[in-house]
Figure 1 (cartoon, one colour):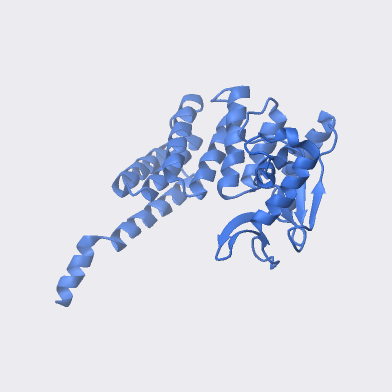
Figure 2 (cartoon, helix red, strand yellow):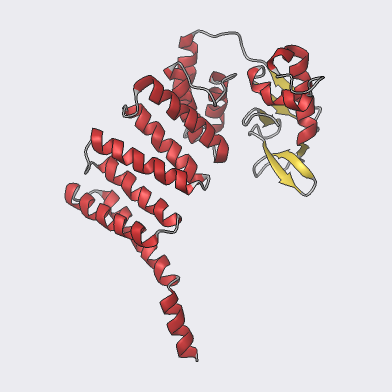
Length: 296
């Protein structure tokens, strides 16, 4: 299949994702776009033919002759963007521009930061332009690409967000070290991406590691450190460790209230604790058993 984020819809301009349906694997758009889905294999075949025609050397010789669907996996190394029309053969290819001056890329990144909250679709396009041809499985050698990937991850969801967040965190760790402020910010984004994707065990490990790094750099009772520990308690609850999660959150609230009196985050933490207690009460076997006994 195609690399994530490469295929876009002509009608809504949003990235199309591969989805399993009753008719097989298709590329489709998120709501509210109502375009018909595209057969994913047919799209991959068409894109793979383009790759083989222009740069067959990019494709490992796994089969002979080289198969188009395998070639499609390497499309991001040759193509900046693919815009899909109404059928699998209606594809508009955007080729990457020739190497642009660094100041132009820096300006695009600055603009993308400004647009991230007001016009995320345009920010997404700018960041994709900056990262055209970049493989998120590698490590960036420039801060610019690492920062662009970090911002892109905040605009994405699911496994695609995880891939770019991981690329950004790995790259910033390599460039600045594991406890530099940009690296810690990227670590938080990576943990959040895993949590949103449902990878709770991985997210919990990342939040704990981040809290330890923050404790070493800004202090064990700093707001940032305690906020991350509070989030790790919520993830711990998602993992099923309910009592441990509540105990941790109670401790964090006590420390936060003492170190930061009047801070609004304390009230939010208390709200989270109340929610966890309510969930425990609602699902308590003891209460259910008592209710059953009364009915008998």
